[in-house]
Amino acid sequence: MREIKNIKILSRKSNLAIIQAQEVGRKIKEHFPDIKIEYINKKTTGDIDLKTPLSEMGSVGVFTDDLRNDLKANKCDLAVHSWKDLPLDLGSDSVLAGSLKRADQRDILFIKKKSQENINKTKRIKILSSSPRRIYNLEPFIKKYLPFNLDKIEFENIRGNIPSRFKKFLSGDGDGLVVAKAAIDRLLNNPIEEFDNIAEKMRKNIAKCFWTITPLSQNPTSPAQGAIGIEVLQNNNELIEMIKKISDQETLDCVNRERKILMNYGGGCHQKIGVSYFVTHFGLMKAKKGETDDGINFYEWEKDNISTNFDKNINENQIYPSSLKNHNLFKREYILEGTKRIKEVSHHCFWISRSSALPIDAQINSTNIIWTSGIKTWKSLAERGVWVNGTADGMGENFDKNIDNLNTNPWIKLTHKSAPKTKIKEVIYTYFLKELPIEKNITDKKFFYWMSSSAFSYVLKQYPEIIDEYHACGPGNTYEALKKVIKDPKRLEIVLSYNSWKKKLV
Image 1 (cartoon, rainbow, N blue to C red):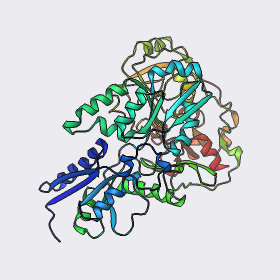
Image 2: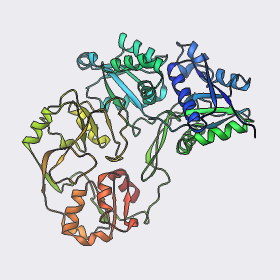
Image 3: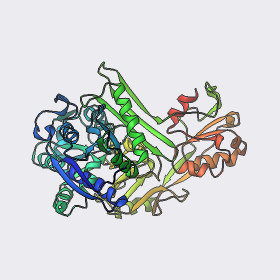
Image 4: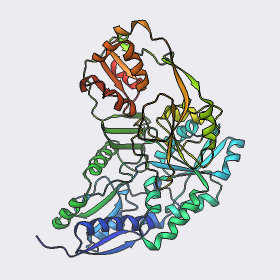
């Protein structure tokens, strides 16, 4: 096998593409320090034509074909792409040799602060985006999860690299801009000295906006978004072996699953299809949402390869609670001191596990970040006029929030006085739990779903015999608490929500 001494890395000419290419180069140098690396770049068809919406351009590879042609002509050794831009079928001349660990795959939505008054006055909002997927996903999301009472949402095409899009956005009449969060993170966190001014300008521009990271449960992203694709000629076995050694297998597995699903729908950036896979401590999660070319809508938000430890078609009388509508184990009594403390806090990130943890009359300083445990809490807070920056999407407090490039404020949790200690150490107690009577026939139940560890502990204390039945809960702090008590792993299952648990059972 020949020894490789020099590598030419080709990328697009945009700042982001150069950052990604050098990220690959640094990783190669970490493993093979003696190799000399040369970076080259060029404009592609998609960089030259900045007027035509991507969904209307003829070729799928408008950002990649020109690079791939240079690779095939031996003008470089490898081409670095934003993987989402690559055609689903690469042909027989080249291979996708690997990928670095994926960056944040979510989208981020910016709303100009100066637009807020006019949005509230006119009940209209204009969002800049040229992606059919984003338009399909974000129209219902914006209506439900932003703190505006909107009558109309408009979408307008925008093209160009991220800094130029921001410039157009801030100087134009658009109210919002949606982009890939991975792009924002890479521009803000780039180590290239000559790009320092770009990061500084980006931070100043972001400071003029409200921002919210759209959850994968509501806005699954373009397959491979956030991942870097490293393309090499099919016959370059030595380089392929090198790239394998710097590649992240978890990223490859997730992206290949996403692209396979897109291929089943025909592929192409004109489609209203989002697919996201990601790894959690309880298995692989899948988000899938969109509309086919035939107008058929679909939606999935669940663990991949779901299995159960019991037979289906359970009698509904055997499950607890039978409904969430009138299910209350506790009455909440608010702590006045907690409401006062919230008003005094600035430059923090608030973790809010349920909307009731934030008292109705609480005043939140505008320097704070708001993060919810789930999407239901987000919607409730938005209806109260609270701007929410993001959510754990039901994945639990330990789920990576990934906002350090945007905000490094310390975290503080709003919760009740008897709540167990968790990863977030600083706490404001906003309410007490006062126990209410438990329904009498609970000993007849065989299947239980727990919304909190407090509910589980209270019922178990009254009816210890239920420990031998089947239990389910979300993947966060409740699960961590329950698994310390329920020793048989077959008796405890993670299910993302009560509704999906009940649907699966009955």
